[in-house]
Image (cartoon, rainbow, N blue to C red; front, side, top):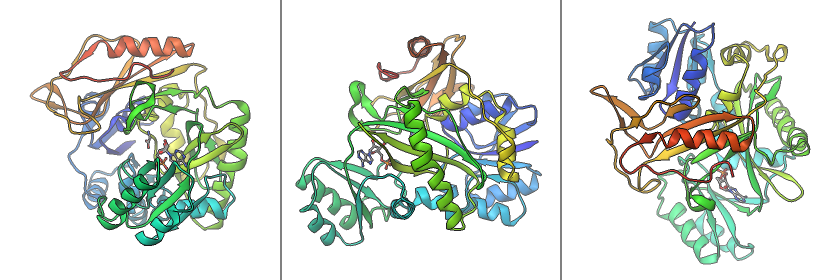
Length: 414
Ligand code: AMP
Ligand code: GLY
């Protein structure tokens, strides 16, 4: 099969690496891909990012299946336009992608289908939102309605902080449209977990759980990032938590989609908060997580391409998904200054690594050299029989890598 894989991050490198291991796959075109996908077996980068050009490429090159990595093309309706032309594509239609594309849609959906989530209200006028703050307990969570590349959630510690954030989002419009409407919700205290699940709209199967480390500094301090490292399985996802998740969140989500007549085929990412006595859904994403994918796929024993095809063809019920009985840890190396401003173009040196896998995120090949090109530059994933072993192996790997200004957390997996 010829595959077109859309995206350019560490997640897409991990997807390309996993799909290249499938006997079903002969060739993977990565659009646009990165310095990691460029050197992966069976892979070739093609410099296309526009949805119409991607459709033309798929037709002209007789692509058998397209796999969409990031959320933006899904929210723009790429699955609908490929499907209209009879092309196979993995991911939800635009109606399904609203679960991530609009926080108001997703919170209202959770409420309608009795899915455990934080109490909230929605606002389209700044003065009403500010007035509402007078009734809130602090901290409070403010969420821009639209896609904001990880910058749309603000945890405000007091009234003044919240008021300023609302003014910035709704009046100054710092997110260029995405913050014109907001959700204000109750702050939940607990530990977070990410669970990806695959669904063909009839059957839904959860993957192994994982734990992201969002803050930039050790001890979960400093501003949030796209994710500085992951561990899987998530040690806080006990049997009881997983059962509650399935009963109170995962199955009600699938039933809700069916009742709304949304034919959802693809991945649903459940962002969870595990509190003292309950499991809450913080958010949906309609694609795989980054860097969750970099620990979930290395643990997956099943053929991912086979699962993707079963999903598109609507026969996922005939499949099981199996994972290694091990732990995986991924440590992200970022450019100095990230998530603020940072420099790119630094040469990346990777010493011989054995058991670890390096997934490139913001890295490109130029004149046969691998150069940094983004905030999160790469991630090193390693497996182990225990959390400690997986962590140790991942840190051996990351210490074998060097580029000017390299920064990584020292406590991923703790
Ligand atoms: P979201 O995009 O909704 O997952 O929010 C991004 C991050 O903000 C989450 O991963 C949490 O760290 C934090 N967050 C979101 N909602 C809440 C909440 N209700 N209580 C506490 N933290 C939250
Ligand atoms: N790591 C969180 C996300 O992919 O949204």
